Image (cartoon, rainbow, N blue to C red; front, top):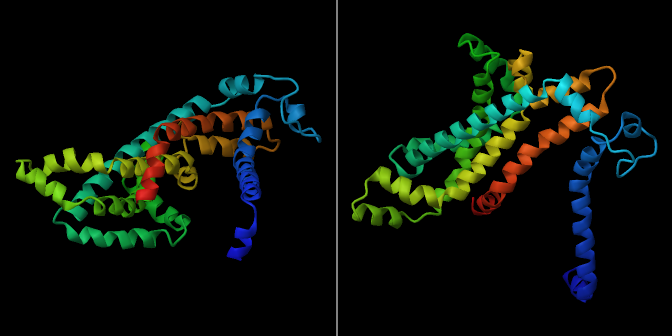
Length: 278
């Protein structure tokens, strides 16, 4: 088979590779483009039998209705608050635990990475009932902190397992050199290790952000008050109606995608570097 590929002219292979890349780009970006363009269409054009790639009549009524007649702004604020707190707590917890496990004297923490891997074997829906009962007893149900706590439960184990590769890649001689120069353990960790594991922290941060931004299962159970609902719950409310307002749905989806795209645009390079290194 390898000989057959070598027999194919290089120019033809380049054309085939280009077509494959274009196909993957269309599969990836096609749905996003379709949703974004549909948000500028009239309701009649959205449900027309003959689809259009570009709105024949551009309208902003879907966005006006979304901002005036729905709780989109409150849902956006709730999602942003939960996502930001989840990223902060996840990074802090993972850094402290990783320093103790991989550079400190708390060696038994290393064994928790196997528990983290085991946690992903079972469906997360199995945790809904026990977590709900625990949060009821500590009076955190129907609060922003319940969403933050649950998201940290989902993100910290995997992030702790992921960050090990970055610590193992840093030679211990760098820390020993810092100790020789008079630095203590805290100074060596902050000035030497943290800058070197920055791609790993960016990976952890993006993973925590995406997980919390799109989490629906636990939020649908824990966030009952309409003023506390997040963007995924708002989209579910639109779909739950008897007649789906496609203009409202597509405009909501388009605006909900923007924060995630902007966040990944700034930290995406570190995320890719972190995945390769980790």
